[in-house]
Length: 387
Image (cartoon, rainbow, N blue to C red; front, side, top):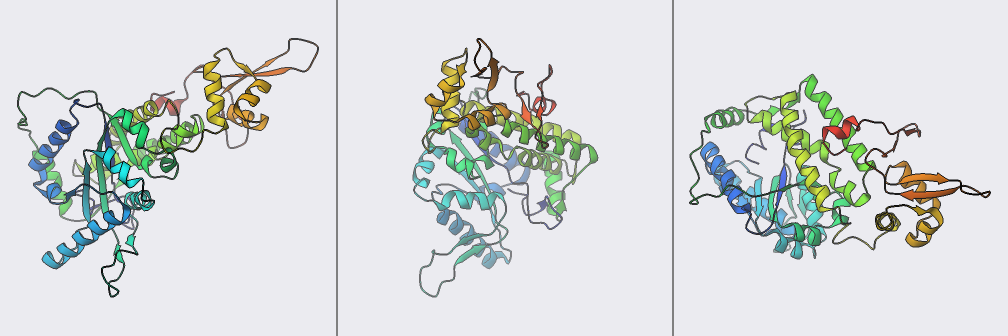
């Protein structure tokens, strides 16, 4: 957030590498200590820039726009420069999600903020003479804390499908080192200080080297394969994987005072996002979760096959799940279920479906042909270590 008005991902200087995160862990594992450690390092590097722009308790889209707008007006009047950078830290995100669920504009404003689009309130008026609040070039980053059980209850599958919560990277926190006191140890931040000074001297457009650009393409391909080869309720949460990876790599490059994203930056970013992908797949493995519509045929098929590891015949599976033959064929083509054709008598062959083994996954290519499973993991998914 601190450098979002100086670092850009495109020549038009519209998009900045904003990265929002959610620490996911049980009570008492040290989520607060981890955040305090990050604050400590940043304070030593860039002073109180984050603290002066930090807020919390944003429970509606209107409240988010109003906060950014009021900060923009105040800084413009006081310093002659409009500051539209905001860090939203919600250490009790569960309470925020409960209240925000009543406001349909909350998630749309979250999407617009992540995409660096215009934030606008058309109803926030104190009098008839007030004009609608509008913020162009807002730079808003979220950092939240939540437990695993609350994520499954309150992070909506429907909103992820709409493109909101898949813009926040969940990170599972095991446990932070136990400190004798809350006082943080001294950290050498001289390189970060130098990098921040370089960044504030002008505007920088981040560009990838040839090796980094190749890895970026691989990540886009991996994302497409991952979405196609996972159930819908999981695929929607990883549909921003490639973009998030590139943004993290851009921030890593900026922290080294360079506007060239190298292969090393991309590899480090992939390691971080890989962990986030594995976190969200683990969080969503039990089903769509809160806010989802009634389980559809696809979810019912997967549940039925999970309950019968040996497989289920097509006719029986259709009756139990409400899916039709075309639905089952589509799921098979996407690699979600495995097909076995049984010929055990003089009649027509019988189709039997089951959950695929790790190497049974087939994915339909652009030409329509099914890519055969191989003895080796898919090289794109291997990059994420989830093949």
